[in-house]
Length: 518
Image 1 (tube, rainbow, N blue to C red):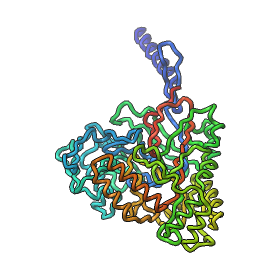
Image 2: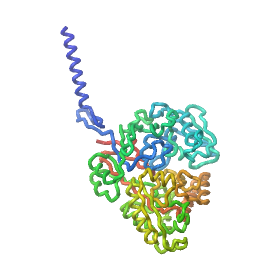
Image 3: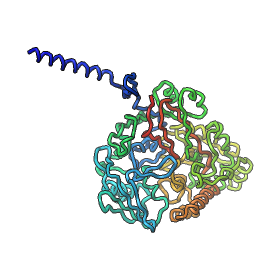
Image 4: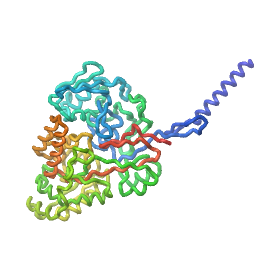
């Protein structure tokens, strides 16, 4: 009996110890950590709240078109390949590939330990399903034009996927990233927007329109070293002042900051300056008068002062552009086009008169409300254009309305928007191809441009590709396809304990390597 009592007291003591240990463990998004035996236990945060200007247009990666959507959802999805921070490509779901000598057949070796967020292994059938969905094989409605030249697809075995093209395509590999072709499970058919499932480092938890998008760590991610964070909340806030106050109050850990507000945060937060590789433009619906006339478009170019916009909207944190490509694209970028239309009011008036509008005209400039930047740009532009008799009415609409009316419906006269960069020169410029109905919302139509863009896909010599891309930029400038204003810097303010913030030459907030150091 005494022995049983001693045993009961021992068990009771052990239970007390367990409870004490449990009471000391980290809670509320923190994980206990100690650097050495005997040191005090530190709580390292493993949850982050990131401010985003607006909601995604779609969570389905094959339907999403807005840059702001990809900022978030690329954390959930991967393609056969993935872009590096320098714009080059690296293995993702495919760990390697081979290209045939004739440039037509791509053979991909599929990584064997990749699972979807629902626990299902990625199979070659899922890969086939993904591409067929993008091609519209079963629906009759293609979601992408990138696969128009696919002759066949086959899976010789469970670890190999083969794509054969009808003709060479020097840009094809860039069509296989999550930006263009995220791999999704066939079992999730018809649910990709309501319940997005990918293979990325984070998986979907919830989406509350107007409030936030919540992701959590993918515990079964094929790269076992990533991610570091357990939870990511993208909080939607269009107002810069409110976002700045939330950052200073500790409610946000990461947000973009307008350049003129940098002095308010530079002493208390870590700042990162991202070369955006985007093109801020004011553009036209070129199917309708008066913007179907190149002289009118050129007149607007001469009347607008890029330096006025850069100084007043970006406080100088921007680079003047002359076409839809920024210096971030290195050798593909054609220097000097930014001087094609130096501010010249008299020249602008001359061109308007030649086009039959000596007294100017009235027009409407439609911009989205999700970023005050667009309204500010529109206000400067309206003042500039007033000097040549163009009376501009600024129409500010909600982001969703802008997408439906302007981008998809082409129901507008003028608009201001920044076109996101891409890792590939072709994907940056192909918006202007006349047959690209999905993206050519300006309705630009130029036969030489179309031919140059067709030729570049067949050209294996890189230097000749460069020459073709540069000619394409010249055509956009000569035809005044838009007013190419600037590639502006995005200034990110973040908690000083954050590290691992990777910047890409396109809109992507990569959460996979972010971590709190304390």
